[in-house]
Length: 414
Ligand SMILES: [Zn+2]
Image 1 (cartoon, rainbow, N blue to C red):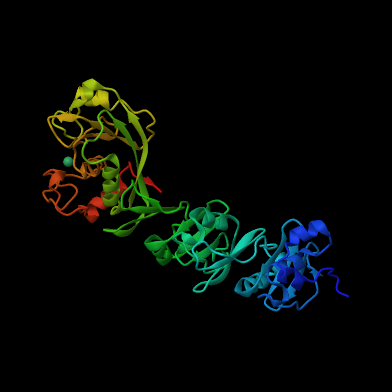
Image 2 (image 1 turned 180 degrees about the vertical axis):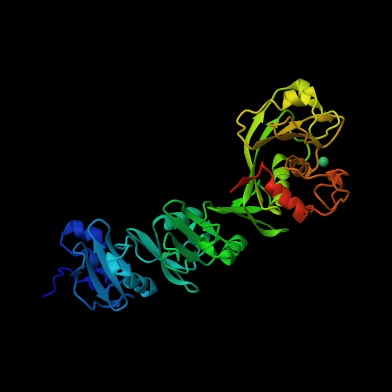
């Protein structure tokens, strides 16, 4: 009669351990049947079979359909069930002959407790009540995994992996953002206000092209940046989004560590105000210098184009500093006492900033280096009354000042 020598319903009813039974009376039962039993057999949620066990069209594995699902068997991965919306998605992609291959898990509850997934040989299908079932695979799936799957800000996929309109890349949209991939850029996430701005410009067909980084925190502050092939998008709670098309490269050399605002706070402040001009601030290297005789550096009148012998000596320290790159020297004090001073020897662009400077001194001095001058207005970065007196952080840059900064020979096209 049946090919089964043991009644599966009896096995379940008597709670006989199948593995123990196999040792006592080894019999050949197909792994698909064993899986069906483990799910409750004919009286379980899968119900009765609607087909016999058949070889898959790819000739490698076997399958059997049931009233409420299917079980697929692969010699290397064993037998696993698929059902419901996930099964429907897998079917729509072409079953085991799809990009996903065979299931390597049963349908499983996600760690967030909301959704369900099956992993397959070469990808996954994720389902939740609000998103439906969609596949992720390859480098995009690896990125999704590295961010923490559905528990990341991305939550659940809203599309299959899809070719971009320009025909070069691939993407999945998710509830909380997107992952974009190309062979040359790899896979990167983009989300939130930065994604909305990129979308408004035309996604990858905009001048920005594809993302080349995930979104990152700007110098430990509130700002965020995503890099793209043709520039960056900056966001901060105060400014909103700005497209950055230029960069400045800055090296830090420390004679005395800052005692007030940290380097991160000063660089974050500089990035926020320079974002108005469309300029990204890249902090390239940091070096400690032991130069006690230059720690209270004589800056003379601190006028552009005129430097003291101590400034000449200090600014000769340019380890690691390339062409069009600049240096900020952190010192104990200047003589006479200023927050900072941007006068520098020709062809050695840089400035000094004192250890107890204001939050905005760094940005102000680089403003000078890039060619903008003092104004008598404490709402603006270039106030000549001292940046401690700035009244509306982040301080204003006018359009003219922004244009001058962008057009400086020390601004580098992104
Ligand atoms: Zn100044």
